[in-house]
Picture (spheres, rainbow, N blue to C red):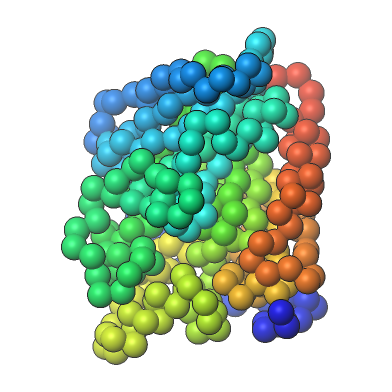
Length: 333
């Protein structure tokens, strides 16, 4: 596949003027405060039998946005004797949490691994178990990128980002997890969610966004010729009078903007032939990321990115990040 976006040199210099709503920080502070106040429910971790002897697996239910139940799998190495570093992973567009015996990489490496289900999604090979209770009537454009887009209050990703924050909070309180050693990660949509969480949750140990989606909506909507960004373009093709309002809503959820609030170390990956998440949009997040950062670039790959090669990079990076004795449980409530 050919290059369809800016050159690598131009991408490294690309810093678009992302619009910042006047109440951006207040909006997210209020959203997360409400999520914490709306429920007194606690996360539930129920161990399940998988036939695996070296990994313990738990069926997880976390109270997410408005206290609505969000499912997941927590996998932990058997026989761990001290608080564990933890990787919280968010899924790509259309994917669900799948089956209990899948996704063993991080537990096999000696870490707790929470895989969060994605509300309303899971129609691909990895099925999901979390409904989107606030979805309302489906819009005229299939998919999730325009669901509730008429207002930031009703937009789908307000609920999803809040779910993700609540899952990180749940792991910080887990008795077998070191709250100071939590890394968030994800591919595509999951990478965008990880970036959002990095800007919403202080004190993370690290962030690993791979070929991140949900970055630089104004450019992505105009240059990406493949779904899911095309959902927004299709919506605006039908609703010609809503362009300004739509991009105002999207500005609250732009992962590249949320990345300007991040402080944790980050390891990005970006693919230069990515037609789904164009590399310039990923670089808009990387270049604006406010914490320490590094990036792995895959010059001849599309949206598959680095795949197993990037996993190898991540394993080494997390091992270095978590080097040293457990930090203890001070500083978190």
